[in-house]
Amino acid sequence: MNGNYSLHNVKDILFMYGTDVIETPEFQNAFYQIHHVRTTVAVHSINVAVISIVLCILLSRIHVRTDMKDVVRAALCHDLGIMGRHQKYRNNFECSQQHPVDSVEVAKKILDGYDDKTLNMIETHMWPVRPGRPRSVEGVIITLADKYAAVMEGTHRAYHTRHIVLASHQ
Image (cartoon, rainbow, N blue to C red):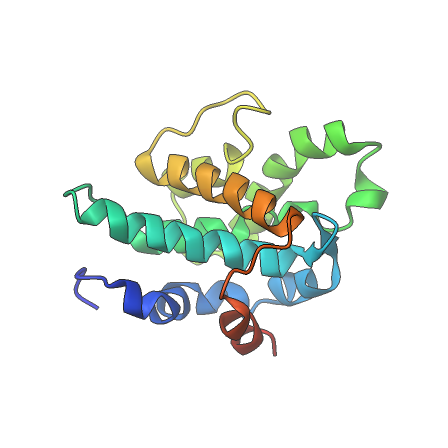
């Protein structure tokens, strides 16, 4: 893809930039941990990635440039540190404060070629609940997409990402 993205190829963009993350054991295990009561960590992360892709495409229409690859990879990794939350964290507050840091450590392990910008997107996705603001447009996109996904998942709203989730779960 040459950067001329369309809303018609959101799934293609997700798999082009996210397959290396989706195929890791860490991400595949995330299909088995409940998250936001009604979904799993993996499904939530795919939802965040899809919403982030759509936001990037829409922003490109008003000439706001974003790094789609970084957005997809960070969105898919943003909650992987929450795995095993009931054993790792004493309560929801501790989880909200620590899982972004733990997610950065998982990302360092599974991403081939990460940079500080990508790690910042992951570490700051809980802003403003957690100190530290995103330092890039892409970080703000993931933060907003994460909040939107959590609300939609909590209210049973249809996402139209089911076919993408099914294709990514092996």
